[in-house]
Image (cartoon, rainbow, N blue to C red; front, side, top):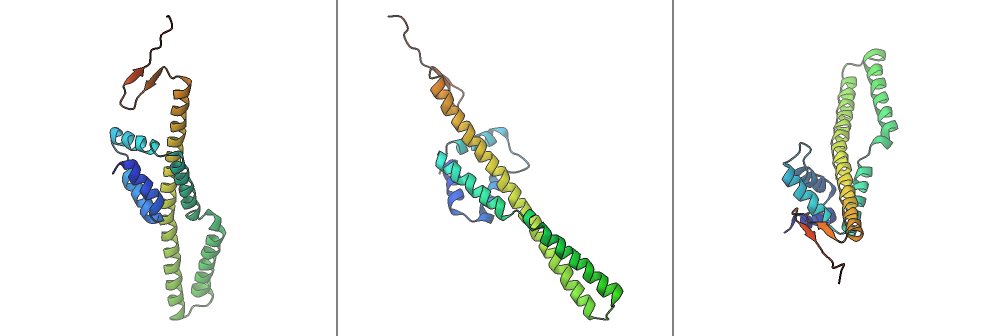
Length: 171
């Protein structure tokens, strides 16, 4: 199975977490050899315009589902409530056992919330990166089509061969 078909299958059938895991595996943040990277980029350009557009739309949806900036007010409210509870339990009204249990539970819940935000931020960054890559592949594919229309005489092939069409100008 060709890499472009694998990408098409992953974009259309897999869940959010599995898709972002696939993207991080195939397009790692730490980079990869240039030849391997270019093969994968050329495979992305082989996808149809509809596949690229639906992939871009899916990445936008993933980005928006993992975007927690719209919940910033809730995070501030939770942190403020946590600090208020700590002040009340430890300074204003110290209780022997009940306060520590509530404090421990509140700290545990806030920690889980922050960990979830950090993990979702990573998925959002991955989706944003892949969306940009798909948009660039689509733009490059469009530019190549325009260049073929504008200059039908010579074309550069992906394997770096130059194909020249010579027409007779004189009878």
